Structures are given as C-alpha cells and as structure tokens.
Image 1: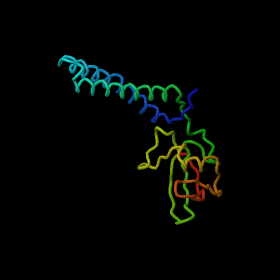
Image 2: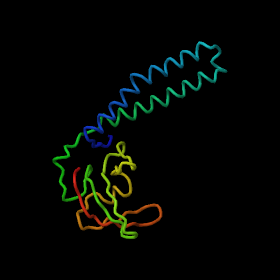
Image 3: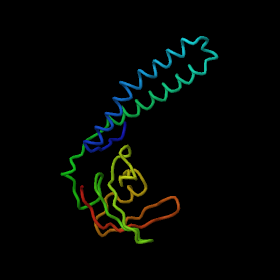
Image 4: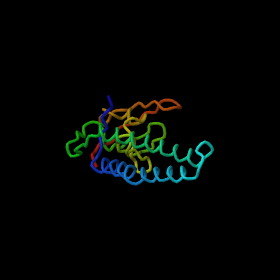
Length: 158
C-alpha cells in the first residue's frame, strides 16, 4: 500500500502537468527515437538503439513513479489547518539555538520540496523534527553531524 501524499492545489496541478508532459510528448518522442535507431540496421551493434531503449525505460519508470504519486495524492484545504501545532503545509518560523539564526520554512510533500523557496519535506530530518510541535517548544532534530535544537517561534498557514 502506498503512502498518501498531501498537496496544495498548485502542487497537484504541477504534478499532473508534468505527468501529462511525459505521457503525451516525451513518450512519443522516445518511441520515435527507437524507430529511427531500428531503421539504421543491425540491432546487435547499434549503440543508438540501445541508448534509445534505455532512455525509454527511464522515462517509463519516471511516469510510473509520478502515476503512483498522483494516485495517492490528496489536496489539503489550507484554510482548515490547525495553526496551534506544526503540520504539513504549516509555515514555521524557527530559531537555531546554536547560532541564533532565524529561518522560515513551509512543510510540504517530498515532491513539492524546494529549499530555494523555503519549502522543506515533512520527510526531511528538520521536517520530521518540527511536526507536532507548538509555539514555544523546542524541536530536537537529528542531522548527520549531530543534534540541532530549534525554538518554534511562529506557526502560520500562508
């Protein structure tokens, strides 16, 4: 059984758009590349054919993965989120107790994570450490080089 993934409407639209792009545009391109390579002669010594078949296999694997995500996707109504504790789609302002640095993160599904825009996965070490915490609590996060402690300063649902 696959794990349910929670998305915003925008995140789910992005996922389905990518899936449609792969199925409707990239899949036919891969088939054409195989057909062109096949037309070039002896398949046993045709590196172009082998490369096209491998690319098609990778494409099909990516399509399958996205179809699985889409089949288990659920949309979250962010206006209904409880802001008393950190949940998926919460925006959290935290303070690193070691260096005093403040950061703001939005917790999202793994496929929506983008550190450059402040979106971290609920499956990441920091995301896991923040889940369920309330303002004023300390999140103890295990990272590769030890344990980090973060003060929960604010929780919102931007």
